[in-house]
Image (cartoon, rainbow, N blue to C red; front, side, top):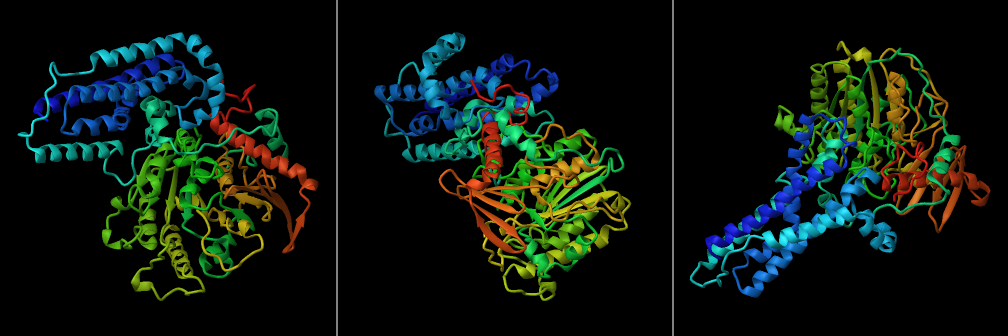
Length: 624
């Protein structure tokens, strides 16, 4: 290859790149009403931020073209091959973006791979759509001819000559590939760029402006979406079924607790069993002064599944974490977002590295203003050698940082020391019971860390003005082997504690799950919760509660005293009462299964159509 080959190569990539901001401009013009509340300066920022996704997309689209271009060989036929690969690769992206100019208005999110679930409908209506949206068809034809005619080329192709250093050509080509892959993943950070990284703005709409449809489609490849469900004739009927069985009312009708600080403590791998067996004596004593529940459950089995459940009220019931699914760019109304709108400062603390479990990008995408990680911690010598800062050090740091934050605040801390390999500081490693499981000693250490934390902060001015919510992301190893292990595997503490305040005591035997935390906080603060998901209800009201989960193709539904396991091929129901487990007849309890089916339809169709908050007001839930 000659110097001129590289110049032409970069001109071709520049041509492909230049089209993506153009698509963004046209997308904006097609959807002016959607962006009507966004200021011009914010639009400019969103537009510029989109260059990061454009750069990744242009390299993904042209990766085969790049590989073919750096091969040190040229001929007339080879040059034609390069042009064909370039034009048709970039035309595919052009068509996706042009189609989404209109399609976006139907589903309110950028295209993802689940659009192909409509394959038979699209095939049947293909010609009608082409003619109905004739202006989009003309745009595509124009772009094809534009790419074909203005494809940068040399006046005369020159054959590769052996006298040009093969070593230099190899090094140059290898360097181009390395930089291409780095830019495709968005940089050298721990986690690669993903669509949710676009939703870092105060206005959710700007995330959709920053993204390009080709990028969201490619990033959703291989992500199996949920299926359309029609257990009920309409999605509205499914919603009506849910509402008939739940109480979504607020308990607090006044502002007695308005503007109280909220501190959310999420413990790593902390089952209720550990507390009952005596490995967490401080937490056990705190529960006696708090609102806690016999039947409290996580809505997932992994740390990355806990945050959507707790912070957005969406349980992990689609087979993969929401933040890694093709629905990650759907609009969700989160607790941080709501509280920020009510003048709260929002913070998230985790002693692990930035990028760990994708926490940083996810919480930023749902409205958390300040993320604190291992890199921000002042004493790196407190690193445990595996995951991050030892809990007792990091909780002390957390307490000191809370003292600096303007009130009212919403601050979350996610601990880590009870994660495998369960590392404990050597100086206190013999202070806690070994127990029968390798996690037990670290549970004692985390409990000790919590005790130190509460002793540290009890003299702070903000302490008595703060509601503490303590839960765990999921369970871990258990000693008890219950006959209904699929229920016990989700049982975690959910504790509401406010120093010196005797909160209204609800039924301690009611069923509570992670998704109840969001509506409970809003109820406590007397903040409007009329536009929330229907999975959770305030723990303070009279709702008896349910648990809704999904694992290995089975939906799990617990509504005391009944526990359901459901899939379309095989289902079962058990009655759990006074430690006696009785298998019941499925047909006798068809109404309970209808409740579960209502949730499934509400979930799946609401995600696919990106209207899960609007189903109750929509006359139809079907995409065109």
